[in-house]
Image (tube, rainbow, N blue to C red; front, top):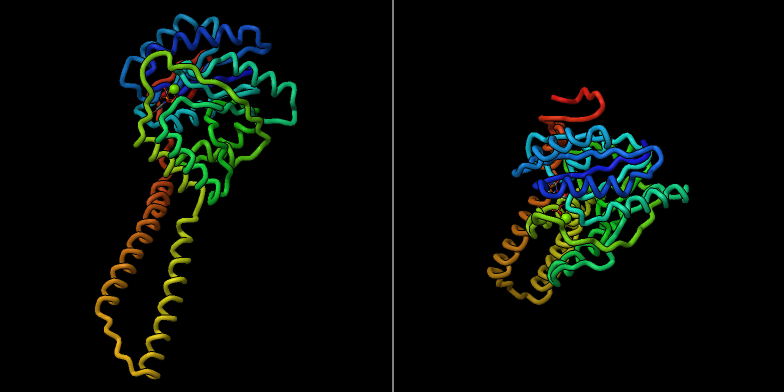
Length: 318
Ligand code: UDP
Ligand code: MG
């Protein structure tokens, strides 16, 4: 198999068939052939029904693997499941909504064939059609994470990419529960070529991402790849200890040398409130990390299947 195409699907009943047809067109000439791995991520519409129907109709002409999650586990889990089932020399991740032209994947494969020095081709959107607020928020996010995180995040790059087998194997070695693909792709390393592209309009349905979901996702990613917030506690602790030592010295000198009484009531209350607040914030930060350790420690599976359809004999079917 030359190419494995992973397609995470959440409420994409109207998009999966047009996508399948577009892929057939784009990759019919690919030597070695291609396979499509559709992951139904607990859709609330009839995506699985449509996929099963497609399987019956296309199984003789297209190599298909259809995974049905037992509930919505999120796009990150769907991508992980897809990577686990990919068998191609090259593996691409593609959205189901046709925002990303499958013909671009053919270009990516072509690039990797001609440039053995590169292992990944990642597409990024040069221009995004989004609100001022959103682009401002993203700018701040990238500035912040690139300053404190141990990995580099490439602004504008998405999950739309094509990788060599070695990269897929590396990603599969990271079985963490809290997944943040932008960080994972960067953490595993390898030579990445960034290719600009223009996203199409969504074919049908609407985006599953709300501002709240994006914020949570970004927060998750931030905490996954840095322990910087934990260090803030030590720095603040040292600074406030130093500050209080200096203050103590001043008070002692004032008392001994000048006999000034210190009317301290307001200062004491303010300081107690300030330090108490700081301690609570820092406890909260530690709590966030501890909660993640707790969840990871349970070693829960990243996803659960309730159905599988494929041309191959698969022993993962429940
Ligand atoms: N998706 C998914 N699980 C989710 C949300 C989204 O598998 O919980 C899939 C979705 O079907 C699509 C891709 O992830 O194929 C990108 O989602 P979407 O188009 O909603 O995001 P956007 O393009 O707006 O960033
Ligand atoms: Mg989309």
